[in-house]
Image (tube, rainbow, N blue to C red):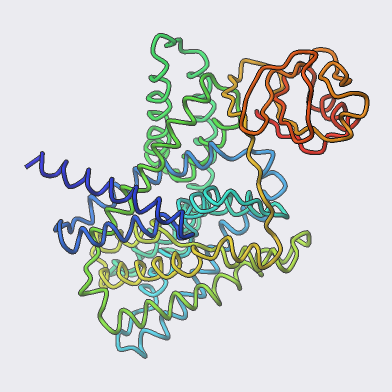
Length: 496
């Protein structure tokens, strides 16, 4: 029996990877294909109906995804957009849930479902946050730059807005299952504030503890154990924070943010490990969700009508309205930037995972909530996910994001600056050889890339326009940039 389970899951993973490759080629979100593979296997191969297991898998996967997203985010990039990002992640989620909940309440009666106001708001709350897995995956796989600091803004919002949706979902589950109506609004607000404060504090503290432990514990005889150690901190951050009444999802994201922005040993190994593990988590989570879907329930006319209408309202009304209201105080964003933020409100696995909570708690119409949340996610990935790049180009916000040719893993213990530059005509005014270039002291050109060939240069090596040079310098970034400006070098990429 266990061998059959392993066989099926190996086939699932293989099919998901192949689907991901096809998705990249045709410009579709890979996560959408993962979901489709899960649905196909659930329809013809596997009979899977455990919402509890799905909830557990989703919780573990979200911990990895949020931590990895925080770890890959540079604080220097999100600092300029910290305020609007936090507003979108909190007030924006609440406004989206309120607007969408009111629409569901009015529409459900028209289609013959007559959902109560608490259940309508609960359904809206499960779908109110943008999904970090979808946003991180699509933005980073496109390798497309966005002007006006939009990429760090979107990643900050999607990585930090799940706690707000989670809190709204938990509170409204309590309201929907309460028979005495004893759920206090004041108590709910107090619990939310406590969860946010404790989550931030514990996330920062555990992040600093993780950095200290990785840098001080000497396990150089087996460097792979550093990844295991950091993984333990990820799950400890979530579980311990939840135990002390904090928000575990927020804590995990902040722990990742702290670890990613402090100097740690073996960063290259850790980043590679969590990059692969994050993809595995996304694949398993979306496959499991796909297995859970009941196509007969999903294709019922009232479910299709409600799901389609709610998805359209959220994409074209609720999300744009909440974004415009939240970004109104921040004048630095152009109208096109606000339009793009409104469009990239991707839904993904998080709304579906949150939609399992009403079912597990025994909320009336719990299956309906799950099916509508699934449909809204599907429509969002199809219509928004496939047009992320095209919309940025259409609005004139995209630019080509160039990647360095030299993939150098630099330990944080090395203080030197590594950079990649492109040779220009201005750089060769005084001569064609490397010794003719006015390079500052304590600065070396250690490798040259030309027409796909790599070689170590010497003083008499002739340079050509377009050559890419790997430069190592003990000078600080300001002095190094000043030297590049004097040489007329315009294209510089830092490798740290």
